[in-house]
Length: 328
Image (cartoon, rainbow, N blue to C red; front, top):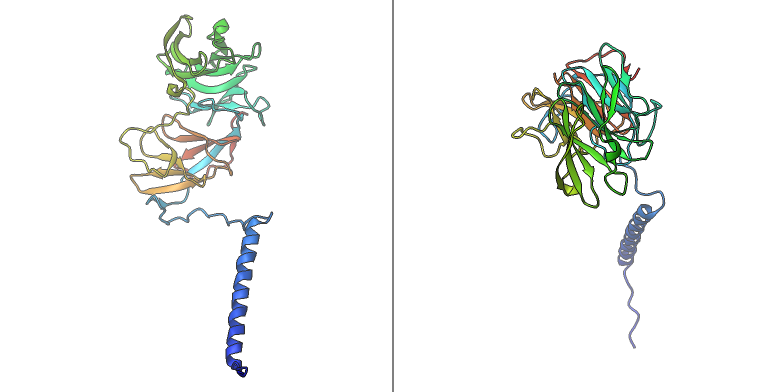
């Protein structure tokens, strides 16, 4: 019969210590897993700060202090679906057209077209036109075309408005009904100062292009295309061929003089960059994300539309003073 062997006390102590460490490790892992599955969710990440002046960012540009001032702002109508350009600078002028809520504070779907000077002068606007979007100036700046949702039959049509004498023309009239639904329209381009080319729905997966005379009233169907080929309700931006744009920039828009580029990054921060100088600076978008941007013809002003506001910045400016309410 074998005698019971005695285990040294030191060995027992080491085994207990090792077992305790294993238990503690398992408890830590279990608690971490429970934390990530609990109703409170994972710990929130701290916001990433805008790089300080002088810092180099992942696009290789050096961050500089802002060299643009916010000089004007106003509310914009919010849309349920894309409706093309909601910002449009009058050619050769410092006047911006934008889609404002009827209440001038908040609104969905339709609103008024407002034309506001960013320096001197009084704004003007449409009244009860139910403007839906796609604001597009004629080349001479005399007419502003836009898509409207008519109150009489809830059909989309294309209107032109001459601010000089407040003349408003429904270009399609009875012909606005082009399908069994609401006959969505879009403005492709002005062909000259009297004629513009529009796109309209002609059924399921069908769009047709029409040329229409503003004053003569003539209409001509040019051709039919599929919906995927129609870009009439896309937001326009200037991206010249051969211009070096960083692939990480979102919705880049080059100024007419080619010296500046507005873009957003993946964190919704708005920037203006000078590629030649190798610098960029952030813009204060009032906690909004850029939906659209438009440069004035002289590259002096930049208008940015966020979800609820239009913001107008003046370049080469560090102290803009009081910010103007554009529609007042």
